[in-house]
Image (spheres, rainbow, N blue to C red):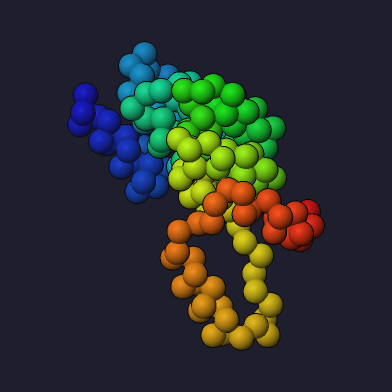
Length: 177
């Protein structure tokens, strides 16, 4: 069983399309571990339609939840992404996973929930980390290289308090629409 799981994982990571049929078979297995790795490898082999089969692994606590979140939110359609994130964020036991899903998805529209969640002491760090992973506008081509280097150095400092983020965000949010 552990060896089969490792083979399934490597099949996806190594892009062994010649073994796709084995992954598809595993994706239908009764064993939840085998099924997860079968689905995971099928997605890595280009079958993004299988991503919605990760739903139980994304929305419920299990050993594969983080891997499922990291993969699923990069390939599922936006409407499914929004529904899953909302479901995670509205379940107090899954809020942390919802924040990680926002970071994995990287869609800038989720900025407001992250700002709000940064006010919760138990979620502030993970929300700030997710906020920092969202895409940033590129600097202008004629930007001073020293200014860009300074900005990168500043990124190494701790994030500002949650109360400091909303005013600057409101003035710059137009650039992301």
